[in-house]
Image (tube, rainbow, N blue to C red; front, side):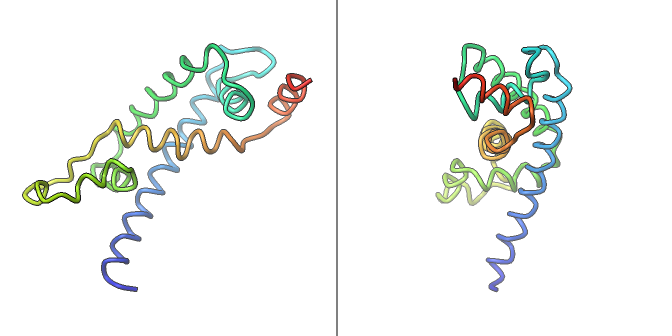
Length: 143
């Protein structure tokens, strides 16, 4: 493996670990948040249902709530973790132009980091998450 590939792999591992940590914290937060439909029980189940089945009227509210939480967790990451996650985003390809060569630090965009974690990790996890309440809700709604 080349030095460049080794460096790239290390950055990927740092990013993956940071994303997994924020995702776990987000799921725990959403499971604790109980102010949703009683048949689902918590915000996480609600998000899973809406990602897997059908986005309803309150989807934007739930999405904004989770986005704000993820953003807060992103701001708590160490700067090198923020940079590593940012380098996984499409926005990081803009760094390839020469105007960034003189910068001392990576010009990380925390909004891009947040959206990456939200879509590629949190909502991806919700798409495959299942429990009895989610299955029952989806089965009954599909009728």
